[in-house]
Amino acid sequence: MLGSLWSFALAAAALSASVLFEGARRPLRGVTPPPNIPSLSAHDCSTCHDAIYKQWLASRHAQSFTNRIFVASFRREPLSWCVYCHAPLPEQAKALAGARHIRVRALPLVDEGVNCAVCHIRNGAILSARAPSAAALRAHRMRVVPSLATSDFCGGCHQFNVPRPGLPVRYTAEPMQDTLAEWRRTTRNKECQDCHMAGGGHAFPGGHDVALLRNTLRVHITPKNDRLQIELEANGAGHRVPTGDPFRRLQLQLLSEEQAATPLGTYSFGRRFRNPPHGDKDTWVLAQDLSIPPPTQGTTAVRSFTAKAMGAKYWRLLFSYPAPSSRADLQGDDIAVEVLRGAVPQPIREAPTPTALPPGRPAPSRP
Image (cartoon, rainbow, N blue to C red):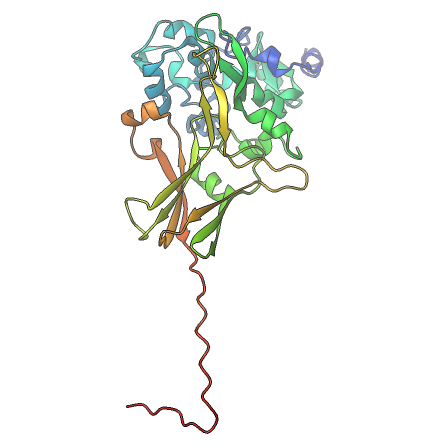
C-alpha cells in the first residue's frame, strides 16, 4: 500500500501556475481535498502543521480579503475580479456573490483569504514541492509539484495585466502587477521563495513588513551647493520597489526639524497610470515609472534625483499603500509606515584664508 502511495506521490507533475491558477478570471477549479481532510479550512491543516498555520495566520495572505486597505477599496468597487484574486476558492466566491458590505465571520472561508488550500490542494491531493515523508503519505494523498518552489508559481497571482470592466474578466496589454516580469529581468540568482518564504516559512514578509523594508532600503544624501543629490537604494530586492499594487509609493520627505509634522518637501516614487489619450477611458496605461528599478547585470537597484535643500536638516522615508480614493477611510499604518529617518548632511564651509600682513607691520593687539 505504502509503495503505491510513494509511486503516486513521486510521479512529479509538471503543473505550471497557469494550470493551477485562473488569472482571476474565475474561482479556482479542482480544489477538492483528499477524502480524509474534512474541509478546505486552514484550521483543519493546523492539527498537524500548527507552526506553519500560526505563521500563515499572521500573514497578509490570511488577511487578503479582510485587511482594512482592501476592504476600503472593495467597498467602493466590489468587482468579481477582486474576489477571484483575494478570495479565490469557489466557496468564497459563492459566499461573496453580489456582496458589498461584508460580514466576514458569517461567510464560509472568506476570513481566511488566501489559505493553505489555494496553493496546496488540487484534485483530491495535497501538493508538495518536494518528496513527502512516509508520515505525510499516511496522513493524506500527495502529489509532488516542483513548480511550487519557483517564482513562476508566485506569478500565478502576482503577475497580471489591467482588467477591463465587466464580466467575463478580460485583460488589456498593460501590466498592472508586474512582479514576476520584473524578477525575470534581473540576474535571477534567487527565487521569490528565497526571500519571502525563507527556511520554508509561511509568514510571507513583503511590503507590509517594516523590518524587511528597513533591511532592504537605503538613503544616501550628498549636499551640492543649494541642492541635495539623493539616492534611494533597494539592497537585495529581486524586483522593482515598490512592486505589486500600483498605488504603493516610496515618499522621501525633507524636514526642518527632526519631529516636524509638515515636511518642507515630499518626493514620491512609484508607478503612475492614466487613461489612454485615445480610445478606452475605462482602462489604464502606464504614464510614469519612478520606482527603484530591479538590479540587472552590472547595475544596482538605485533611483537618483536632486532636490532643493530648502534649509532641510532631517529626512524621513515613508512607504505608502492605498489608492487616493481610499485614504479618507483609513488611518495610521494603513496609509503609510515610516521606514527610515536621518539627518541631512550639511555642506562643509571652509574658513576664510587669513590676509597676510605687510612685512614689519605688527599684528593688531586685542583690546
